[in-house]
Length: 115
Image 1 (cartoon, rainbow, N blue to C red):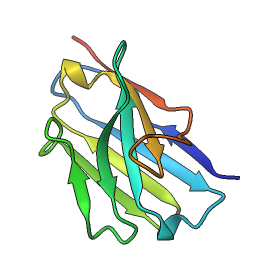
Image 2 (tube, one colour):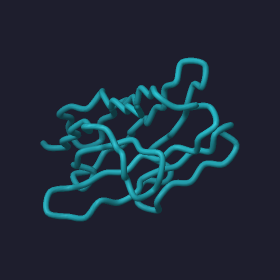
Image 3 (spheres, rainbow, N blue to C red):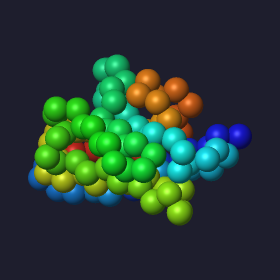
Image 4 (cartoon, one colour):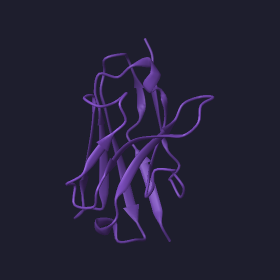
């Protein structure tokens, strides 16, 4: 059974940072490209970042490029998302998934950016 478990969210002021983690199990993590997606209140799910299985291809949506950093540790079956210079509009539930549509995603971790 594919299991994805996100953690690391929280409440942070604008300009602050958070580090999210995604623990994966039930599949060959090191062979799969992975995505971070998010859903803000009242908005549709959107992809945030993706990282190829060997970390050699990384993509970010324009609004987070230069502020977020995605990485993974295939030996530990964990993917990370470092969120820097957070903005109010980054407030959302963040999920990890094995595709950009977010299907099969975990329960998510709430990130709230507020002053």
